[in-house]
Image (cartoon, rainbow, N blue to C red):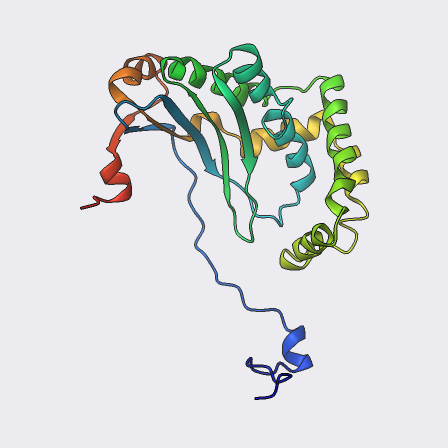
Length: 244
């Protein structure tokens, strides 16, 4: 083989232009109720909280209002979750939320690592914000959030690597040709009603799974008082498999 010979099979123009077939995944049924899964880690100095449900695919027509809704809720440092749990109460170094959008629906999650003795208080504030995002967003908060998204958008094109990742997103998810040129314009069009509509559709606090990893003997009594839903108990061995 010469230095110019490729070890890979040659691809014809017809092959290169044909989209690769995608595996079909069965739809995941929505949860009927909220449940709590407490994973015991004796002596843990913090509790790790994750609250979530099945989210949406990247192809969703609600992409832009969801960007605004999640940024308001937990997608930036000045989001409601972070300002509440970190800045106001000091329960955590940071709280956030995200929609992990893939070719198929990915997870929606909200979470933080919190002080062990403030686990139940933190959970209470999480659900206060998850329920609060379902209500009308004040005009000034909406304007700040849209400005944040619009002003940070150009930063995603600073290097050739940044540009390639943006183009990769367009190709992988088969986005419209006007997605990148129209991003800021589409964000600017989002109204408070749009945010409330997608929040009500995709963020359903009473149907989420709540996973807490921490010292059960310390945190269980406080979690029980919140009455979030049925409690399920797991050990680390049950989660990861016994390591002999």
